[in-house]
Image (cartoon, rainbow over the protein chains, first blue to last red):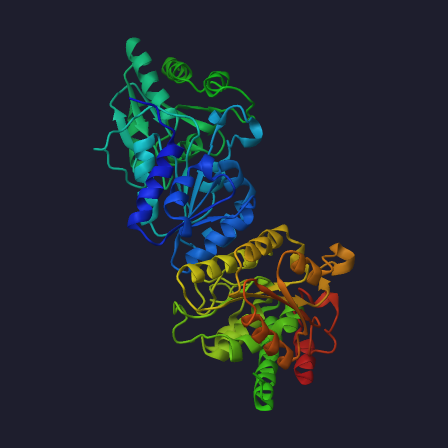
Length: 309
Length: 273
Protein backbone atom coordinates (compact mmCIF):
# COMPACT_ATOMS: atom_id res chain seq x y z
CA UNK A 1 0.00 0.00 0.00
CA UNK A 2 1.27 3.49 -0.76
CA UNK A 3 2.23 5.78 2.09
CA UNK A 4 0.09 8.92 2.31
CA UNK A 5 0.39 11.87 4.68
CA UNK A 6 -2.72 12.53 6.78
CA UNK A 7 -2.60 16.21 5.73
CA UNK A 8 -3.15 15.08 2.12
CA UNK A 9 -6.23 13.16 3.19
CA UNK A 10 -7.44 16.21 5.12
CA UNK A 11 -7.19 18.43 2.05
CA UNK A 12 -9.07 15.93 -0.14
CA UNK A 13 -11.74 15.21 2.46
CA UNK A 14 -12.36 18.89 3.11
CA UNK A 15 -12.79 19.65 -0.59
CA UNK A 16 -15.22 16.73 -0.92
CA UNK A 17 -17.23 17.78 2.15
CA UNK A 18 -17.44 21.32 0.81
CA UNK A 19 -19.76 20.06 -1.91
CA UNK A 20 -22.08 18.40 0.56
CA UNK A 21 -21.98 20.86 3.47
CA UNK A 22 -22.41 24.40 2.21
CA UNK A 23 -21.92 25.90 5.67
CA UNK A 24 -18.27 24.86 5.70
CA UNK A 25 -15.86 27.78 5.42
CA UNK A 26 -12.09 27.35 5.52
CA UNK A 27 -9.57 29.75 7.01
CA UNK A 28 -5.81 29.48 6.75
CA UNK A 29 -2.82 31.54 7.85
CA UNK A 30 -0.64 31.69 4.73
CA UNK A 31 0.08 27.95 4.75
CA UNK A 32 -2.68 26.65 2.51
CA UNK A 33 -0.29 24.84 0.20
CA UNK A 34 1.27 22.99 3.15
CA UNK A 35 -1.92 22.36 5.14
CA UNK A 36 -3.65 21.32 1.88
CA UNK A 37 -6.59 23.65 2.38
CA UNK A 38 -5.53 24.92 -1.05
CA UNK A 39 -7.55 22.05 -2.56
CA UNK A 40 -10.73 23.48 -1.00
CA UNK A 41 -9.67 27.03 -1.87
CA UNK A 42 -9.38 26.15 -5.54
CA UNK A 43 -12.79 24.50 -5.60
CA UNK A 44 -14.64 27.02 -3.41
CA UNK A 45 -12.73 30.31 -3.50
CA UNK A 46 -15.71 32.26 -2.10
CA UNK A 47 -15.70 30.10 1.05
CA UNK A 48 -11.96 30.23 1.61
CA UNK A 49 -10.42 33.03 3.67
CA UNK A 50 -6.71 33.54 3.90
CA UNK A 51 -6.09 35.41 7.14
CA UNK A 52 -2.41 35.97 6.53
CA UNK A 53 0.31 35.25 9.07
CA UNK A 54 -1.92 36.08 12.05
CA UNK A 55 -3.01 33.00 13.98
CA UNK A 56 -4.75 34.77 16.85
CA UNK A 57 -7.03 36.57 14.41
CA UNK A 58 -7.45 33.30 12.47
CA UNK A 59 -9.02 31.62 15.51
CA UNK A 60 -11.08 34.65 16.54
CA UNK A 61 -12.48 35.09 13.04
CA UNK A 62 -13.38 31.40 12.91
CA UNK A 63 -15.25 31.89 16.19
CA UNK A 64 -17.22 34.80 14.69
CA UNK A 65 -18.15 32.71 11.65
CA UNK A 66 -19.40 29.93 13.94
CA UNK A 67 -21.75 32.32 15.78
CA UNK A 68 -23.46 32.87 12.41
CA UNK A 69 -24.08 29.18 11.76
CA UNK A 70 -21.02 28.46 9.65
CA UNK A 71 -18.77 25.46 10.21
CA UNK A 72 -15.28 26.96 10.04
CA UNK A 73 -12.18 24.81 9.59
CA UNK A 74 -9.17 26.85 10.73
CA UNK A 75 -5.83 25.49 9.60
CA UNK A 76 -2.19 26.17 10.26
CA UNK A 77 0.75 24.21 11.66
CA UNK A 78 0.09 22.53 15.01
CA UNK A 79 2.69 24.59 16.86
CA UNK A 80 1.02 27.85 15.81
CA UNK A 81 -2.57 26.62 16.19
CA UNK A 82 -2.35 25.02 19.61
CA UNK A 83 0.58 27.07 20.85
CA UNK A 84 0.43 30.62 19.59
CA UNK A 85 -3.36 30.85 19.50
CA UNK A 86 -4.00 28.77 22.63
CA UNK A 87 -5.81 31.46 24.52
CA UNK A 88 -7.98 32.45 21.56
CA UNK A 89 -8.97 28.78 21.21
CA UNK A 90 -9.72 28.65 24.93
CA UNK A 91 -11.66 31.88 25.37
CA UNK A 92 -13.19 32.62 21.95
CA UNK A 93 -13.90 29.04 20.81
CA UNK A 94 -14.08 26.49 23.62
CA UNK A 95 -15.57 28.55 26.46
CA UNK A 96 -18.56 29.59 24.29
CA UNK A 97 -18.55 26.02 22.85
CA UNK A 98 -18.53 27.30 19.28
CA UNK A 99 -18.63 24.96 16.29
CA UNK A 100 -15.05 25.54 15.13
CA UNK A 101 -12.77 22.81 13.77
CA UNK A 102 -9.08 23.40 14.27
CA UNK A 103 -7.28 21.29 11.71
CA UNK A 104 -3.59 21.43 12.54
CA UNK A 105 -0.96 19.90 10.29
CA UNK A 106 2.80 19.34 10.66
CA UNK A 107 2.45 17.85 14.13
CA UNK A 108 5.35 16.03 15.76
CA UNK A 109 9.02 15.70 14.85
CA UNK A 110 8.40 14.15 11.41
CA UNK A 111 8.06 17.75 10.24
CA UNK A 112 11.76 17.03 9.76
CA UNK A 113 14.24 19.53 8.41
CA UNK A 114 12.45 22.69 9.63
CA UNK A 115 13.57 21.78 13.13
CA UNK A 116 12.29 22.27 16.67
CA UNK A 117 10.54 25.62 16.17
CA UNK A 118 8.09 23.91 13.82
CA UNK A 119 7.85 20.49 15.51
CA UNK A 120 4.85 20.48 17.81
CA UNK A 121 5.27 17.97 20.64
CA UNK A 122 2.92 19.70 23.08
CA UNK A 123 -0.31 20.27 21.16
CA UNK A 124 -2.23 17.22 22.39
CA UNK A 125 -1.49 18.17 25.99
CA UNK A 126 -2.58 21.76 25.43
CA UNK A 127 -5.74 20.95 23.51
CA UNK A 128 -6.99 18.14 25.71
CA UNK A 129 -6.76 20.34 28.79
CA UNK A 130 -9.46 22.72 27.51
CA UNK A 131 -13.07 21.92 28.47
CA UNK A 132 -15.46 21.19 25.53
CA UNK A 133 -12.57 20.34 23.19
CA UNK A 134 -12.43 17.03 21.31
CA UNK A 135 -8.97 15.89 20.22
CA UNK A 136 -8.48 13.53 17.28
CA UNK A 137 -5.14 12.24 16.00
CA UNK A 138 -5.78 9.96 13.00
CA UNK A 139 -3.44 7.08 12.18
CA UNK A 140 -3.66 7.06 8.39
CA UNK A 141 -5.28 8.67 5.38
CA UNK A 142 -8.51 6.67 5.59
CA UNK A 143 -9.00 7.46 9.25
CA UNK A 144 -8.07 11.09 8.65
CA UNK A 145 -10.66 11.38 5.89
CA UNK A 146 -13.39 9.91 8.08
CA UNK A 147 -12.34 12.01 11.07
CA UNK A 148 -12.74 15.20 9.03
CA UNK A 149 -16.32 14.21 8.23
CA UNK A 150 -17.06 13.20 11.82
CA UNK A 151 -15.65 16.52 13.05
CA UNK A 152 -17.85 18.46 10.63
CA UNK A 153 -20.91 16.52 11.80
CA UNK A 154 -20.09 17.00 15.49
CA UNK A 155 -21.45 20.22 17.00
CA UNK A 156 -18.72 21.89 19.03
CA UNK A 157 -14.97 22.49 18.93
CA UNK A 158 -12.71 19.75 17.56
CA UNK A 159 -8.91 19.68 17.27
CA UNK A 160 -7.71 17.51 14.39
CA UNK A 161 -4.01 16.61 14.32
CA UNK A 162 -2.37 15.76 11.02
CA UNK A 163 1.17 14.97 9.96
CA UNK A 164 3.37 16.21 7.17
CA UNK A 165 5.17 12.92 6.56
CA UNK A 166 3.60 10.01 4.60
CA UNK A 167 2.48 7.13 6.83
CA UNK A 168 1.57 3.44 6.41
CA UNK A 169 -1.97 2.56 5.42
CA UNK A 170 -3.73 0.92 8.36
CA UNK A 171 -7.39 0.94 7.38
CA UNK A 172 -9.38 0.12 4.26
CA UNK A 173 -12.70 1.74 3.47
CA UNK A 174 -14.63 -0.90 5.43
CA UNK A 175 -13.41 0.83 8.57
CA UNK A 176 -15.93 3.00 10.39
CA UNK A 177 -14.37 5.79 12.44
CA UNK A 178 -16.34 6.99 15.41
CA UNK A 179 -15.36 9.86 17.75
CA UNK A 180 -14.35 8.44 21.13
CA UNK A 181 -13.89 4.85 19.95
CA UNK A 182 -10.57 3.06 19.95
CA UNK A 183 -10.06 -0.03 17.85
CA UNK A 184 -8.17 -3.28 18.44
CA UNK A 185 -6.02 -3.82 15.35
CA UNK A 186 -4.46 -7.06 16.54
CA UNK A 187 -5.48 -9.37 19.36
CA UNK A 188 -2.87 -10.50 21.89
CA UNK A 189 -2.66 -11.54 25.52
CA UNK A 190 0.88 -10.86 26.74
CA UNK A 191 1.20 -7.11 26.39
CA UNK A 192 -0.89 -4.31 24.88
CA UNK A 193 0.53 -1.56 22.70
CA UNK A 194 -1.74 1.49 22.61
CA UNK A 195 -0.67 3.84 19.85
CA UNK A 196 -1.88 7.00 18.17
CA UNK A 197 -1.29 8.79 14.88
CA UNK A 198 1.92 8.12 13.02
CA UNK A 199 3.01 5.57 15.65
CA UNK A 200 0.24 3.09 14.91
CA UNK A 201 2.17 1.66 11.94
CA UNK A 202 5.25 1.27 14.16
CA UNK A 203 3.15 -0.43 16.82
CA UNK A 204 1.95 -3.06 14.33
CA UNK A 205 5.54 -3.70 13.24
CA UNK A 206 6.58 -3.98 16.88
CA UNK A 207 3.90 -6.63 17.41
CA UNK A 208 5.42 -8.67 14.58
CA UNK A 209 8.88 -8.38 16.14
CA UNK A 210 7.50 -9.47 19.51
CA UNK A 211 5.58 -12.36 17.97
CA UNK A 212 8.88 -13.78 16.67
CA UNK A 213 10.07 -13.83 20.27
CA UNK A 214 6.94 -15.59 21.45
CA UNK A 215 5.25 -12.50 22.89
CA UNK A 216 1.73 -11.95 21.59
CA UNK A 217 0.97 -8.24 21.70
CA UNK A 218 -2.46 -6.66 21.42
CA UNK A 219 -2.34 -3.47 19.32
CA UNK A 220 -4.89 -0.74 19.99
CA UNK A 221 -5.37 2.40 17.90
CA UNK A 222 -6.58 5.39 19.90
CA UNK A 223 -7.29 8.23 17.52
CA UNK A 224 -9.65 10.17 19.77
CA UNK A 225 -7.41 11.26 22.63
CA UNK A 226 -10.34 13.11 24.19
CA UNK A 227 -12.84 11.85 25.08
CA UNK A 228 -10.68 8.75 25.47
CA UNK A 229 -12.09 5.23 25.09
CA UNK A 230 -11.77 4.05 28.70
CA UNK A 231 -13.40 0.70 28.00
CA UNK A 232 -10.84 -0.38 25.43
CA UNK A 233 -7.95 0.73 27.67
CA UNK A 234 -9.31 -1.29 30.61
CA UNK A 235 -9.72 -4.27 28.27
CA UNK A 236 -6.14 -3.84 27.05
CA UNK A 237 -5.01 -3.80 30.68
CA UNK A 238 -6.10 -7.44 30.93
CA UNK A 239 -2.78 -8.20 29.20
CA UNK A 240 -1.10 -7.07 32.40
CA UNK A 241 1.34 -4.65 30.72
CA UNK A 242 0.85 -1.62 28.50
CA UNK A 243 3.14 0.33 26.19
CA UNK A 244 1.86 3.60 24.76
CA UNK A 245 3.35 5.13 21.61
CA UNK A 246 2.92 8.63 20.27
CA UNK A 247 4.79 11.29 18.32
CA UNK A 248 4.35 13.81 21.13
CA UNK A 249 5.91 14.64 24.46
CA UNK A 250 5.41 11.79 26.93
CA UNK A 251 4.04 14.50 29.23
CA UNK A 252 0.39 15.28 28.61
CA UNK A 253 -0.30 13.21 25.51
CA UNK A 254 -1.67 9.72 24.89
CA UNK A 255 0.62 8.10 27.46
CA UNK A 256 -0.60 10.46 30.15
CA UNK A 257 -4.24 10.02 29.12
CA UNK A 258 -3.92 6.22 29.27
CA UNK A 259 -2.11 6.41 32.61
CA UNK A 260 -4.91 8.57 34.00
CA UNK A 261 -7.48 5.93 33.08
CA UNK A 262 -5.41 3.05 34.42
CA UNK A 263 -4.42 4.76 37.67
CA UNK A 264 -8.08 5.19 38.57
CA UNK A 265 -9.63 2.08 37.06
CA UNK A 266 -7.01 -0.65 36.85
CA UNK A 267 -3.41 0.11 37.82
CA UNK A 268 -1.19 -1.68 35.31
CA UNK A 269 2.56 -1.60 34.69
CA UNK A 270 3.25 0.59 31.67
CA UNK A 271 5.91 2.35 29.63
CA UNK A 272 5.46 5.43 27.50
CA UNK A 273 7.15 5.71 24.12
CA UNK A 274 7.22 9.32 22.95
CA UNK A 275 9.42 12.39 22.91
CA UNK A 276 11.20 12.30 26.26
CA UNK A 277 10.39 15.89 27.29
CA UNK A 278 12.86 17.50 24.94
CA UNK A 279 12.83 19.62 21.79
CA UNK A 280 13.43 18.08 18.37
CA UNK A 281 15.97 19.16 15.77
CA UNK A 282 16.46 19.31 12.01
CA UNK A 283 16.86 16.07 10.12
CA UNK A 284 15.13 13.57 7.89
CA UNK A 285 11.91 12.26 9.46
CA UNK A 286 13.10 8.62 9.55
CA UNK A 287 16.41 9.63 11.12
CA UNK A 288 14.62 11.68 13.76
CA UNK A 289 12.25 8.83 14.59
CA UNK A 290 15.32 6.65 15.29
CA UNK A 291 17.16 9.37 17.18
CA UNK A 292 14.20 10.06 19.47
CA UNK A 293 13.42 6.35 19.97
CA UNK A 294 10.10 6.29 18.18
CA UNK A 295 10.51 3.10 16.13
CA UNK A 296 9.03 -0.40 16.16
CA UNK A 297 12.28 -1.60 17.76
CA UNK A 298 11.91 0.87 20.62
CA UNK A 299 8.29 -0.15 21.22
CA UNK A 300 9.18 -3.87 21.15
CA UNK A 301 12.09 -3.31 23.51
CA UNK A 302 9.85 -1.47 25.99
CA UNK A 303 7.31 -4.31 25.83
CA UNK A 304 9.99 -6.92 26.48
CA UNK A 305 11.36 -4.97 29.43
CA UNK A 306 7.87 -4.72 30.89
CA UNK A 307 7.36 -8.47 30.53
CA UNK A 308 10.68 -9.16 32.29
CA UNK A 309 9.40 -6.92 35.11
CA UNK B 1 -31.06 61.99 8.98
CA UNK B 2 -31.29 64.24 11.94
CA UNK B 3 -32.10 63.04 15.39
CA UNK B 4 -34.99 64.68 17.23
CA UNK B 5 -34.75 66.38 20.60
CA UNK B 6 -37.31 63.87 21.93
CA UNK B 7 -35.03 61.00 20.95
CA UNK B 8 -32.08 62.60 22.68
CA UNK B 9 -34.15 63.08 25.83
CA UNK B 10 -35.31 59.47 25.67
CA UNK B 11 -31.73 58.17 25.28
CA UNK B 12 -30.52 60.45 28.08
CA UNK B 13 -33.20 59.09 30.37
CA UNK B 14 -32.35 55.44 29.53
CA UNK B 15 -28.62 56.10 29.96
CA UNK B 16 -29.31 57.52 33.41
CA UNK B 17 -31.15 54.31 34.37
CA UNK B 18 -28.28 52.26 32.96
CA UNK B 19 -25.77 54.24 35.01
CA UNK B 20 -27.83 53.67 38.15
CA UNK B 21 -27.90 49.92 37.42
CA UNK B 22 -24.11 49.90 36.94
CA UNK B 23 -23.60 51.45 40.38
CA UNK B 24 -26.20 49.27 42.10
CA UNK B 25 -25.05 46.01 40.54
CA UNK B 26 -21.32 46.49 41.10
CA UNK B 27 -21.97 47.64 44.68
CA UNK B 28 -24.11 44.55 45.30
CA UNK B 29 -21.52 42.27 43.65
CA UNK B 30 -18.71 43.88 45.63
CA UNK B 31 -16.51 43.80 42.54
CA UNK B 32 -16.55 44.71 38.86
CA UNK B 33 -15.54 47.57 36.61
CA UNK B 34 -17.68 50.70 37.07
CA UNK B 35 -15.26 53.22 35.47
CA UNK B 36 -15.13 51.74 31.97
CA UNK B 37 -18.79 50.74 32.15
CA UNK B 38 -19.82 54.35 32.77
CA UNK B 39 -17.58 55.64 29.98
CA UNK B 40 -19.19 53.49 27.24
CA UNK B 41 -22.71 53.62 28.65
CA UNK B 42 -24.00 56.32 26.26
CA UNK B 43 -22.63 54.50 23.20
CA UNK B 44 -24.28 51.23 24.24
CA UNK B 45 -27.56 53.01 24.99
CA UNK B 46 -27.52 54.71 21.58
CA UNK B 47 -26.78 51.42 19.83
CA UNK B 48 -29.47 49.32 21.52
CA UNK B 49 -32.18 52.01 21.66
CA UNK B 50 -31.72 53.62 18.26
CA UNK B 51 -29.27 51.86 15.96
CA UNK B 52 -29.36 48.07 16.20
CA UNK B 53 -31.96 46.12 14.30
CA UNK B 54 -32.59 43.58 17.05
CA UNK B 55 -35.54 41.90 18.70
CA UNK B 56 -35.25 40.98 22.40
CA UNK B 57 -37.92 38.32 21.87
CA UNK B 58 -35.73 36.62 19.25
CA UNK B 59 -32.17 37.06 20.52
CA UNK B 60 -30.71 34.60 17.98
CA UNK B 61 -32.69 35.91 14.97
CA UNK B 62 -30.33 35.33 12.04
CA UNK B 63 -30.96 38.71 10.36
CA UNK B 64 -30.23 40.79 13.47
CA UNK B 65 -27.45 43.33 13.76
CA UNK B 66 -24.60 42.05 15.93
CA UNK B 67 -22.79 43.70 18.80
CA UNK B 68 -19.52 42.51 20.33
CA UNK B 69 -18.31 44.05 23.58
CA UNK B 70 -14.61 43.48 23.03
CA UNK B 71 -13.79 45.29 26.27
CA UNK B 72 -15.71 42.61 28.12
CA UNK B 73 -15.02 44.07 31.55
CA UNK B 74 -17.66 46.73 30.75
CA UNK B 75 -20.18 43.90 31.09
CA UNK B 76 -22.24 45.78 33.74
CA UNK B 77 -23.08 48.45 31.14
CA UNK B 78 -24.07 45.90 28.52
CA UNK B 79 -26.09 43.81 30.99
CA UNK B 80 -27.95 46.91 32.17
CA UNK B 81 -28.73 47.95 28.58
CA UNK B 82 -29.90 44.42 27.68
CA UNK B 83 -32.13 44.30 30.77
CA UNK B 84 -33.62 47.71 29.96
CA UNK B 85 -34.19 46.52 26.39
CA UNK B 86 -36.09 43.50 27.72
CA UNK B 87 -33.74 40.58 27.00
CA UNK B 88 -34.01 39.37 30.59
CA UNK B 89 -35.46 40.45 33.96
CA UNK B 90 -33.84 43.42 35.66
CA UNK B 91 -33.69 41.36 38.87
CA UNK B 92 -30.86 39.37 37.25
CA UNK B 93 -28.66 42.47 37.44
CA UNK B 94 -28.44 42.20 41.20
CA UNK B 95 -27.08 38.65 40.91
CA UNK B 96 -24.07 39.79 38.84
CA UNK B 97 -20.88 37.82 39.61
CA UNK B 98 -22.65 35.56 42.12
CA UNK B 99 -22.21 31.80 42.12
CA UNK B 100 -24.73 30.11 39.85
CA UNK B 101 -25.91 33.40 38.35
CA UNK B 102 -26.54 33.99 34.66
CA UNK B 103 -24.51 37.20 34.54
CA UNK B 104 -20.83 36.28 34.68
CA UNK B 105 -18.07 38.74 35.51
CA UNK B 106 -17.32 38.92 31.79
CA UNK B 107 -19.88 38.20 29.03
CA UNK B 108 -20.73 34.51 28.53
CA UNK B 109 -22.86 34.13 25.40
CA UNK B 110 -23.88 30.56 26.23
CA UNK B 111 -26.18 31.51 29.06
CA UNK B 112 -27.17 35.11 28.46
CA UNK B 113 -29.83 36.14 25.93
CA UNK B 114 -28.71 39.06 23.75
CA UNK B 115 -24.97 38.39 23.90
CA UNK B 116 -23.56 37.79 20.43
CA UNK B 117 -20.06 36.86 21.63
CA UNK B 118 -18.17 35.71 24.67
CA UNK B 119 -15.50 38.26 25.57
CA UNK B 120 -13.36 39.41 28.45
CA UNK B 121 -9.89 38.44 27.39
CA UNK B 122 -8.88 41.70 25.72
CA UNK B 123 -8.07 41.97 22.05
CA UNK B 124 -10.32 39.18 20.80
CA UNK B 125 -13.63 40.87 19.97
CA UNK B 126 -12.70 42.54 16.69
CA UNK B 127 -11.62 39.18 15.23
CA UNK B 128 -14.99 37.65 16.12
CA UNK B 129 -16.76 40.70 14.67
CA UNK B 130 -14.77 40.19 11.45
CA UNK B 131 -16.03 36.61 11.27
CA UNK B 132 -19.62 37.81 11.69
CA UNK B 133 -19.18 40.52 9.05
CA UNK B 134 -17.56 38.07 6.61
CA UNK B 135 -20.40 35.58 7.17
CA UNK B 136 -22.91 38.36 6.47
CA UNK B 137 -21.19 39.25 3.20
CA UNK B 138 -20.93 35.57 2.21
CA UNK B 139 -24.65 35.03 2.83
CA UNK B 140 -25.57 38.38 1.23
CA UNK B 141 -27.33 39.50 4.38
CA UNK B 142 -27.94 43.12 5.29
CA UNK B 143 -27.12 42.95 8.98
CA UNK B 144 -24.39 45.19 10.37
CA UNK B 145 -21.80 44.33 12.98
CA UNK B 146 -20.73 46.69 15.77
CA UNK B 147 -17.86 46.19 18.16
CA UNK B 148 -16.65 48.28 21.09
CA UNK B 149 -12.98 48.30 22.05
CA UNK B 150 -11.23 49.96 24.93
CA UNK B 151 -8.40 52.37 24.15
CA UNK B 152 -6.02 50.47 26.40
CA UNK B 153 -7.20 47.31 24.69
CA UNK B 154 -5.65 48.49 21.43
CA UNK B 155 -2.28 47.67 23.00
CA UNK B 156 -3.12 44.01 22.24
CA UNK B 157 -1.44 42.84 19.03
CA UNK B 158 -4.46 40.82 17.94
CA UNK B 159 -6.45 44.04 17.54
CA UNK B 160 -4.13 45.05 14.71
CA UNK B 161 -4.12 41.60 13.12
CA UNK B 162 -7.89 41.96 13.04
CA UNK B 163 -7.86 45.61 11.92
CA UNK B 164 -5.66 44.60 8.97
CA UNK B 165 -8.14 41.85 8.04
CA UNK B 166 -11.25 44.09 8.32
CA UNK B 167 -9.74 46.51 5.82
CA UNK B 168 -8.33 43.74 3.60
CA UNK B 169 -11.78 42.18 3.26
CA UNK B 170 -13.40 45.63 2.83
CA UNK B 171 -15.82 45.04 5.69
CA UNK B 172 -18.01 48.13 5.28
CA UNK B 173 -20.72 46.29 7.26
CA UNK B 174 -18.48 46.57 10.32
CA UNK B 175 -18.19 49.55 12.67
CA UNK B 176 -15.76 49.64 15.58
CA UNK B 177 -16.12 52.07 18.47
CA UNK B 178 -13.08 52.88 20.56
CA UNK B 179 -14.01 53.97 24.07
CA UNK B 180 -11.24 56.53 24.37
CA UNK B 181 -11.31 57.30 28.10
CA UNK B 182 -7.54 57.59 28.33
CA UNK B 183 -7.07 55.39 31.39
CA UNK B 184 -6.11 51.77 32.00
CA UNK B 185 -5.50 49.79 35.19
CA UNK B 186 -1.96 50.99 35.82
CA UNK B 187 -2.56 54.60 34.84
CA UNK B 188 -3.01 56.90 31.83
CA UNK B 189 -2.65 54.98 28.57
CA UNK B 190 0.01 57.41 27.39
CA UNK B 191 2.15 56.53 30.41
CA UNK B 192 1.56 52.77 30.57
CA UNK B 193 2.03 51.95 26.85
CA UNK B 194 0.81 54.62 24.50
CA UNK B 195 -1.36 53.35 21.65
CA UNK B 196 -1.62 56.93 20.37
CA UNK B 197 -2.49 58.20 18.03
CA UNK B 198 -5.27 55.64 17.76
CA UNK B 199 -7.04 57.50 14.95
CA UNK B 200 -3.88 57.58 12.84
CA UNK B 201 -3.26 53.89 13.39
CA UNK B 202 -6.73 52.88 12.16
CA UNK B 203 -6.32 55.26 9.20
CA UNK B 204 -2.98 53.68 8.35
CA UNK B 205 -4.64 50.25 8.44
CA UNK B 206 -7.14 51.41 5.79
CA UNK B 207 -10.12 52.32 7.96
CA UNK B 208 -12.44 55.30 7.70
CA UNK B 209 -12.07 57.14 11.01
CA UNK B 210 -14.51 59.47 12.76
CA UNK B 211 -13.75 61.45 15.92
CA UNK B 212 -16.63 62.13 18.29
CA UNK B 213 -17.59 63.03 21.83
CA UNK B 214 -18.73 59.65 23.18
CA UNK B 215 -21.25 61.23 25.53
CA UNK B 216 -23.04 63.26 22.84
CA UNK B 217 -25.92 61.23 21.38
CA UNK B 218 -26.18 63.43 18.31
CA UNK B 219 -22.51 62.85 17.49
CA UNK B 220 -22.76 59.10 18.19
CA UNK B 221 -25.76 58.66 15.91
CA UNK B 222 -24.42 60.91 13.16
CA UNK B 223 -21.18 58.91 13.15
CA UNK B 224 -23.12 55.65 12.85
CA UNK B 225 -24.95 57.09 9.83
CA UNK B 226 -21.66 58.15 8.28
CA UNK B 227 -20.29 54.64 8.85
CA UNK B 228 -23.34 53.10 7.16
CA UNK B 229 -22.76 55.33 4.15
CA UNK B 230 -19.05 54.55 3.94
CA UNK B 231 -18.47 51.89 1.29
CA UNK B 232 -15.52 49.62 0.68
CA UNK B 233 -13.89 49.94 4.09
CA UNK B 234 -14.69 49.55 7.78
CA UNK B 235 -15.26 52.55 10.03
CA UNK B 236 -13.67 53.26 13.39
CA UNK B 237 -15.49 55.74 15.59
CA UNK B 238 -12.99 57.00 18.15
CA UNK B 239 -15.16 58.29 20.96
CA UNK B 240 -13.61 60.64 23.50
CA UNK B 241 -15.11 59.63 26.81
CA UNK B 242 -14.71 60.17 30.53
CA UNK B 243 -13.98 57.16 32.69
CA UNK B 244 -16.58 57.07 35.46
CA UNK B 245 -18.80 59.53 33.54
CA UNK B 246 -21.79 60.78 35.55
CA UNK B 247 -20.42 60.03 39.01
CA UNK B 248 -18.34 63.05 40.06
CA UNK B 249 -16.03 61.22 42.46
CA UNK B 250 -15.34 58.50 39.86
CA UNK B 251 -14.71 60.72 36.83
CA UNK B 252 -11.19 60.40 35.43
CA UNK B 253 -10.00 58.51 38.52
CA UNK B 254 -7.92 55.48 37.54
CA UNK B 255 -8.75 53.64 40.74
CA UNK B 256 -12.37 53.16 39.64
CA UNK B 257 -11.33 50.91 36.75
CA UNK B 258 -11.82 47.70 38.67
CA UNK B 259 -13.17 48.60 42.08
CA UNK B 260 -16.77 48.41 43.23
CA UNK B 261 -18.32 51.22 45.27
CA UNK B 262 -19.15 50.58 48.92
CA UNK B 263 -22.76 50.91 50.03
CA UNK B 264 -22.14 54.50 51.13
CA UNK B 265 -20.28 55.40 47.94
CA UNK B 266 -23.08 53.84 45.88
CA UNK B 267 -25.63 56.01 47.67
CA UNK B 268 -23.56 59.09 46.98
CA UNK B 269 -23.19 58.08 43.32
CA UNK B 270 -26.91 57.46 42.92
CA UNK B 271 -27.65 60.93 44.29
CA UNK B 272 -25.52 62.41 41.49
CA UNK B 273 -27.39 60.33 38.91
